[in-house]
Image (cartoon, rainbow, N blue to C red):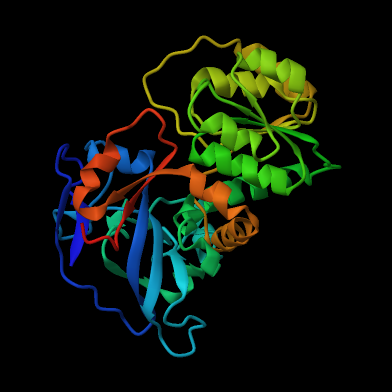
Length: 352
């Protein structure tokens, strides 16, 4: 069986190669891979800056943004051959912390979780794979092309859940949301904002390509100005920060309306310095009852929310988010950025 593999912590080790065919256990499904998405984490792993191979193995099958079709499922599992599915990325610590023991493994406190295609488990970037029946979600058949967006959508489904939980500490009826960044996470955060019938604004520095049109077709407003100018005019109740850029992070924190919530989903690179008036930031957070919360990863509940959100979305809009599809045998091409890339996926069922 062919799969896209890598030696974690070794730059230039990406290779499409033969790996053993998967053998499902009694509680696993056998799935034919259809597509796998490529994100910043995958690029870090390919660059040798991140990732852990499975114990006893020098290589790891890459890919955590999955889409497949069930070939065989255990009797009574609730899944059947032909079902379209996506697999959950994270697995809880086998000696779980309190969060993992309650199914909230995305909030693991001790760091001994594992992750498909990232940390000590092979990923979904193969022509076939197995997945535990309680670590998968069934997708609407209409998502045969765009279901690969389930994992990134689960990330923003969790972010919105966190925003709403923080907001519920008191009266909370947000009207305006600002999303910083129009990459896949930002666009999907905007989608979920419009599904909540909020006034959605998206800030990105790109002026051409597909991003402005994707935002406009959600009924949202696209901005390219400085963040201070945008926040002063929009006065967002909620900001979903999806870039990790320090200037945008602090601009968002300083620019919300009173009782505002900033949810950080972008991971900032280390080593970049930024001068900040920490006293002013603290003063505004305290005096305006603002809140800042970080959010990463997702659990099974969030995958189910993601499946619902994608099923309710315009399938043509979702399809337009996927700007490039690369066959498995040419997988390396997916890791070289092109000017108009939004979401790049590797197709697993294409023999070329």
